[in-house]
Length: 634
Image (cartoon, rainbow, N blue to C red; front, side):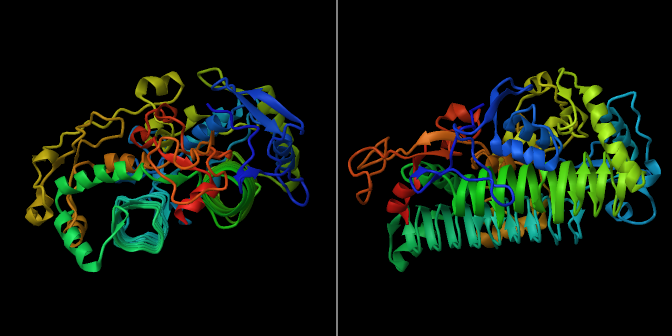
């Protein structure tokens, strides 16, 4: 694991100045002149740093410093979030429903409507705290007794196959998304409409295979674009229309592979490209990949960010190692995929809260001091809770709504709760939980991964920290073998007609063999079908049928994104051209003919090996600092 400590975020070509703790909680990023402590991660055995600002934060929320390094903490949290693995499982009444819990899971489930109703009471499962055994054993027992909602979704309309989502309408297999309509096979998107196979798409319409893009219309096979339309194969473009195969353009129209064309010439060329042909689309995909690597990329996508390190962060201040964060994020560390959060550490899928620590899918509605939480909303002063809402002063509770002063779902008075709480923390330290690998869990550690109701390869941990079965089990994670499938494949992907114009409704009756044939590590379903809405989209947009199943397509999008991890690197601008001599600068830079002296923290790995196989084919980028990038692109 790279050492993330002792790094100052790059800004304006210089090292960031010291900050003071000041009002609220101002984070000071590991300056050598400040007191700090080097620790050894009890999981990976690597060194990590706990600096003065960290100690101040832990003291403020009254938790001890961690014994896992930041990366291992992230992996452990992610092992508790299953976004995309759906199963058919019988609920507590014997009805088979769609669930994120596997059929063999001991977790009891209810349909969402019943779970949210007043027809049952999670307090009925409350337990007296048992000081004769570790807390986490008691938590697991409670977890297996309190019924869970089958999936995590809010106010869905005709969107049964979605999870970790809200306000979805007519969507299918779209996950961790919000306010989408007619979105298929997509994830981490907001306001996505009439679109397929997209990841982290914001307010996009009629888009296909877009990643990290926003406010775009009829944009296909593109990444990191804003306000682009009627275009294909774009990277890092802004306000462009009718462009093809372009990189780094601003306010352009009628360009092909960064070369300008007249309107008539452009339309003639595009017609000849004919992306309705799978063979043509694949040829241009490979050509575009090579073209993209000839242009510089900015070391990080930071917009409206002051003293921030990470990637894809906007409107943020004083944040370290944060990724995919937006809208009023301040004084935070180690956060991924969230918005509107302040004074918080270690979270994924979080927002609208403050003083959060070690949370996943947690926050909303003025939440505060949610510690070690999974799916806890609008709550405060909670510890080790799962799927609770509108509550405060909870410890080890599951499924509670609008409750206060509870331990293991048992009600206490305010005085009794406040007296019991320090006693439980002391017990957790004196009688800690030891997992199968001998890792020690006292108060202050997140929920052990081995207690997760999900196998490692069902969770997002597999997406960010991919492992094979042997490696996962060696590290103490559970692994789930794929369900035995007896699909009668009627046509192999290689035998599909090349062009969409040669496809008719009979394709809806076919069971298509995935081109990966179950041999990959991408949870390949081995076969898939085309649904009517999907076929209509391909035909109207003149796009080819996919050759991979939805799971494999999802993983292909994942490898197009940088990991939530930082490497310390130097700008690869050598003066008149890039370090690899593929790109010649268009103007003179501030360092003139000498190599650029700027260094930074970036999510672009220094080598293919650094990504552990993830996206290795795209790990040859020309990475420029902000000054050099601005000189060339903006």
